Image (cartoon, rainbow, N blue to C red; front, side):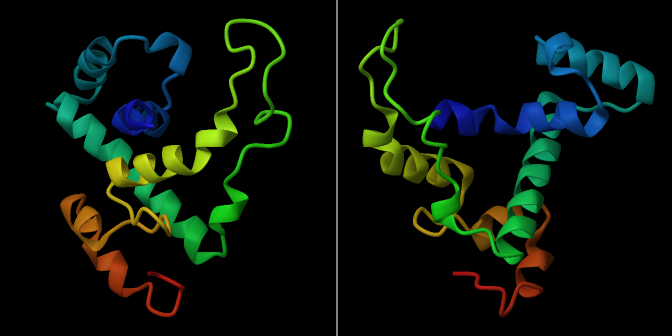
Amino acid sequence: ARTCARFNGIRQFDDCVGICRLASINPRITLRAFNAVTGWGFTLEDAFRVGLRAVNALRLFNLRHGLRMEELRPSARYGSVPKDGPAAGKNIMARWGEMVRLYHEEMGWDPSTGWPLPSTLERLGLGHWWESLSGAGKK
């Protein structure tokens, strides 16, 4: 959960600039190419910030439009216990709640509701969005 949250921003940066994930194995090389094409001076931190802004904007949109936490569970097939292979007998669903809570904490979201915290939105330059969510079920 922590690793997933940590790298969340860089993959969304790739999405924002239209780079194929299979071709962007090394974020530093991707960033050098991006800067060469745009003439900008983005740092790796800048790229993560762009990606995290996208993740949080998407999260706010989905929650505002009725996404419920119980809908964010793997399908029965994906969440089932593998019968063979290196993960045979391992049940991710037994720790699903803990993984989600850790992910939310790492992302700067309320651990129980999944709503981005006002401090997270402020840090990403999205603080003005919080006030526009009144009555949208924010917690």
